[in-house]
Image 1 (tube, one colour):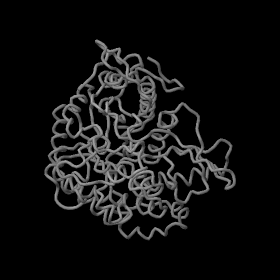
Image 2: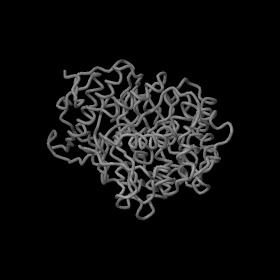
Image 3: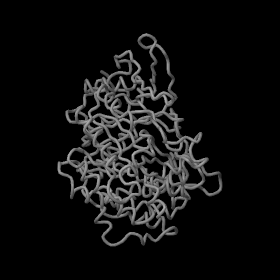
Length: 494
């Protein structure tokens, strides 16, 4: 056993009973079958089919073909010993236009999936929205208009009526920051709009959608689930020696990136400095009386997604502005009201996404949330890394294998950070590794691989990577193994 290392490469740390370890995916990234069984088009179908929007012209039309291979994929989850599986429900597979009665075929698919998880002893964690807004709603204004939040509440009700006797954790939204600021601010994500005002309108209507959906679910579910939302909160650091100007840069980005969500969701109010910083963009008159009370619903667990830290400073307005914020640059800005802030490159090592690897950032984030919201349970709902995986043929009888020591090291260090948070009193309920499968990585198409299971996109063959075997050992022993202890020679899996 090694403990307390500065590099977070501890081993042997035991996780307590009830700490749920699993993996996560999202519907558009894995399901495929985009035009089967009545599914309607989503904004990501439209976006990915628009030339120049996604690397290599890739789309989610087939992806991992999970819609047809779900049962075999559940068998892989069981083989890994996953205790939980965080998946998302495709809104257009339930309501093709975002309104109306549920498609029986869509409900049946997710019902089979949930039943299959439960039969294998895997806890189902369902996310209602992981970015695949029905295109028909976008045509009416998407998240920039209030009617989409109202439609989302009805969608939640429909799904809750169908699956509300079996889901253990309901998550309303995944990373509303991305939906609002990358979808409507920078234009890097669907629907590809670049408008500061539209981005801020989307922020509010996503927050409202969350609150209304929680209320709708509570009216119809018949078991005793937990309710949640998942946020990708930014771990912000000021450039060394930047003094008050650096602190103000952190404050500005914190307001846009973090407190624009935690404020109304957990405190019942937007931060005053957010309104001040964005006054030249909007007067926020779309926030109506009663909205904040609707948004401020008690939740049982706050989902936390973490990948990297963010380094900022005040921009002098003269030198070339650095925008190393980790997001694809397509011309617009995901930072409305922060034109005087620049984002600085950080020390490596880096993942294939160009994101810095810093497990101390995860610990810092969990401790900060615990300090601000001491009674709020937390769960790591996404953490993982993309690397340039290579297939070798040194398994049993020359079977293909993927040795991914960088991903194993990444997971070891971040599980160590999670354990340290637990040891310091954080009420951390679990850890969902991103991602179970290699998949469609949004604007990067199939060029980036986050999976602990490799997918050959030509044959759909699945191969357990070393990181999957390492995770299996961690779950089996409830302790962090060393990188050399995955203990399996590997084999290809259909």
